[in-house]
Length: 315
Image (cartoon, rainbow, N blue to C red; front, side, top):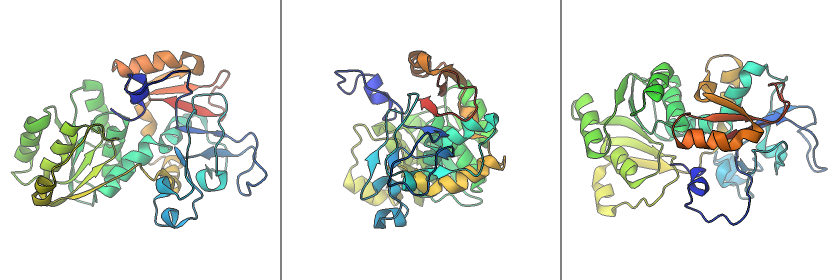
């Protein structure tokens, strides 16, 4: 479960209609008087946290903790206001072709988050990586690990369509077991050593402990699944001997590289969108994902035929 499913599934009290969504790309309609670098007519991609990209936290590469950050929500709408536009948005040189829109949309969150998961888990060429979670972020964590040179990638999944896509993105092994049984399976595959890097892309107590227990001594665990009810025992963690790093992904840090990879055709992360719907059918998109009939739904505003208009996404 990721944070966007919390209000949908009733874990947060919602007393009135609330626009959802925080992944977006599209063409700039107008800019405020203080905006200097972003111009109307440009195609842009942004992050789910607005950042000035100049404060000390941004300069260290953690724009999601910008000292002036603002949450960007309500993206599932015909128009979206993005604060701190000069620091938050990245414009492409030209309007991209229609077939690139889904992949560019993923850079705004799920690819950016999956990439951060691999980076934070110190994925290196030749390493063994385990990915816990087979949603869009987990699947793109697999893609990211492959791009970073991992030799063996163990994807944990019980769902055949997601297993197939994980394989396509670079997974070498599929593990269907969870919890202690999942840990035992990874230990068996790694001859009792554990994975060099484990990407935790779920956010539950079970998935966090599974990640820590699946990692070799001195290995790395990243956690990008928003934690729900996760509590760690200090003594157990002390003797686990693993590096642990997680946060809301600083997507803005990675946007230049990820957009470049997409535009050059080196990656096709848009394959996680296995359902496309017009914006007015947003409810069906949520139902399909909640019922696991779809990995991820892409929503298009009315009249948009992938001609570069604002794209918003439901997950």
